[in-house]
Amino acid sequence: MFKKTAHFLLPLIILLAISISSVRADDLLDIQNQIDQKNSLYWQTQQSLDQIKKDIAYLSSSIYSTAAEAEEANKKVAEISSELSKVEDDLNSKKNELRSIVEIRDRQIRQFYKHPGDNPLELFINAGGFSDFTQGMAFQKRVLGTSKGIIESVNKEVIQVEKTRKEIVKAKAELEALANDINSQLASLRSNYYYSTYQQSSLSNKLTGLQNELQNLTSKQQELLAAKFAASGNNQTVGDSAPPSEPLPNPGFSPAYVFLTYGYPHRVGMSQYGAYGRAKAGQSYGTILHAYYNNVSVGGYTTPTRINVAGVGIIPFEDNYLKGIAEMPSYWSMEALKAQAVAARTYALAYTSWASYIGNEGAYLSQRSICTSTACQVYNAGKVTDPAAARWRQAVDATRGVVITYGGVPITSYYASTAGGYTMLPTEIGWSYNPPYLKKIRDFGPSGAYEGPAYGNSPWYHTFWNGKYCGGTFPWLNKTEVSDLFNAALLSQANSSYNQYLSPTDGCLGPAGWSGTQIINKLNQIGIAPVGTLVNGGILIGFDGAGSTSSITFVSNNYPGGKTFSGSFFRSVFNLRALGRLVILTSLYDVLIR
Image (cartoon, rainbow, N blue to C red; front, side, top):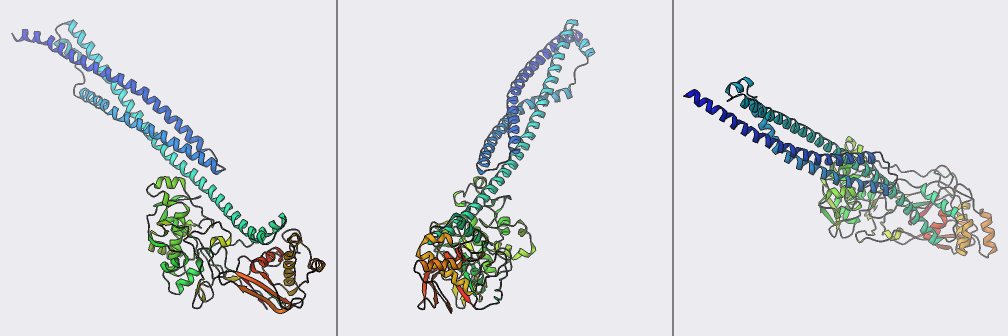
């Protein structure tokens, strides 16, 4: 009875197993179809990634010689980044879809592990006959073959997805590095442009001032004036090391005359030597800043964590960029250093328009940068870790986040080395407008100018510029040479058409002008008495009390009552006619006679 029952159940069990195996095989075939479809879509993703890699390689090999080209490359980087994000999203979607298939693969692997396949002899013994045995073997082969095939396909898919994921990670890193390189190039190009524009603008302002006083200058004379000003192009700010004062040499003759300038270069905003002098007098950095900037607030402000620095890249704002600012000696008084740190922090934020990007630092870093020259602010990476600059870093840390604002926005906190005792409004030096937060002050304490000998002792407070020879810095003029300057002023005042002949006689920086005798002859010819013999000590200077020389008067045998010129007019004539590279740099000057 048992044998009969067994013979009856075996075919049924085999048939049931075959039925179950058949269903499993059909399911696996459906899964294989899904993988085939996904492979087609995956191929499209891979093609997109390959194109992106080609685009990155092309951009990496490009050199951008203009800001416009670098800007265009930046746009291309943004496009590639967007495409790369899409590819990454596609891959993530495929990875999610792949999970369910991987689960089926894993079940198949576990099934093979538990039931590696019935022995053919066992199938034959248990089969209801040869026909059942043959059919069972066929179904088993189909199930095993399909299962192994699907496992291999899924494994290949998993490997390919992981490979693509690594390629995307690499492409993203390359793209980020490329974007940094392009932005560094762009920042450098902008830096050069801004510096050139600044230099050109500064020179243009000086020349415009001269041309307002002296009409009919030739192009050669304008080149001569530009060369004189360029020869005076020292640092706009103090820098890491304060320069020594250049003592006046012994003239070796008498009477000797030297024209001395107060301040350098633009006299707008905070005077660094004035801040130093005020700190030495016991003022806090807040008091110092309020002295130089009008109706401002000095306090905490939201600052960026990083900044894009031309030729350097994106670096931490407080702990790298500001600590590398090389605009003031680290051994100066701490309150002066703090004032400088706040002014530098504020200037950087205003220059890069940070207020427009608060909350979107990514756009800020990609679109705004700051140069490292005096056209912006001098940055020196070595200062960040230099032991000698420890006090500067202390000042930065002590004022972390403190900014000068006007109406809630960081100001363009102009500063320069020395104001000559008086700060000026921008329009007074030829700039286009006066921001409301800049003011004009008389920068004096009880013992004199805060930049002067009793306080800051700036070498630029009251000094000569250049020398009367083509080389060297000998500044002294004799009586004949000074008389010639006044004769040139008389002739220029009579008729501006004579200005074309009033270049220096030495030909040092261009074609020589008329000699002193030729000028005297022309004055006599048009009925104007030349200077004659200057009375010893017969030069008087008038000041307007607000930072400018208002007049200069000479007294001579031909002008016993004196002859007066406006301070600005004589300065223009002096800068055109004076020998060598001698120049009066600012509107405030006087003359020393020995």
